[in-house]
Image (cartoon, rainbow, N blue to C red; front, top):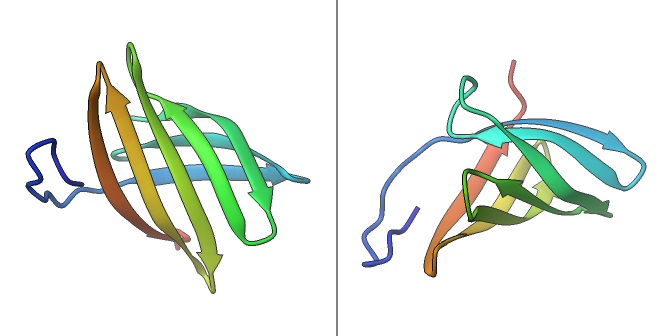
Length: 94
């Protein structure tokens, strides 16, 4: 994830996803113990969009795509006028 000053940081993400038709629900967060509900989750072909409300005024918007057995894309977080971006690359837990 890049901070407002442009400095890059490595971090993790854990997601639990459930697809019903084109609707996507579940949770996402920095690890399995800290999870937040997914809202506005949608699957359109291989394209996935979803939002996570993390705390007061902090929304993370994901634009992802299925790539084989992985989900890749980007995330944008806004919090009180501050914006951060992240690259996302997740796989199925074994």
